[in-house]
Length: 150
Image 1 (cartoon, one colour):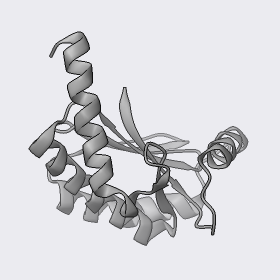
Image 2 (cartoon, rainbow, N blue to C red; image 1 turned 180 degrees about the vertical axis):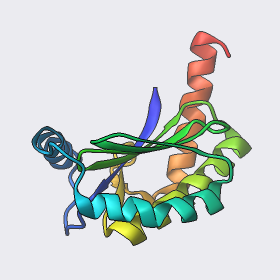
Image 3 (tube, rainbow, N blue to C red; image 1 turned 30 degrees about the horizontal axis):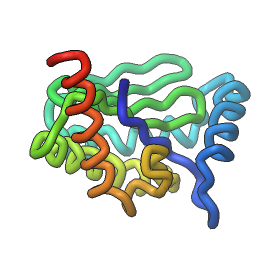
Image 4 (cartoon, rainbow, N blue to C red; image 1 turned 60 degrees about the horizontal axis):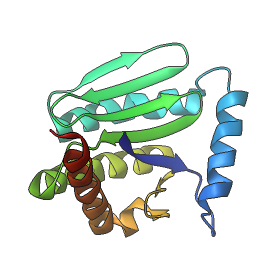
């Protein structure tokens, strides 16, 4: 299980059901990684490395991916879908630190792609819901630990 954030085209109304359907259709329709996203990725790499420190990058014909082992954060481009995931590992202060890293990633991706980060857990743009997102992460992680152990 992970906390997911999707990067979408800006629009006046952000409805998660509508966005999810668009993302699915776009992922199926995009046979290759769009050149604009490849170019944006190349611009993002140095900034992401500076913001996060030790990261691992991978690439394929249809993908670009960043992994941060310490936090489990993954930034992915698959076809024309850009997403960010973080596993439910973090509580309290650790969640706050992880979301500081996520906020840095979001800022870089938004600046370089022109997309905005949408958080389906809060059903709002990520930048409007950071505190709420941290609380959701912490609460869900604690709940999972109670149910299944560490």
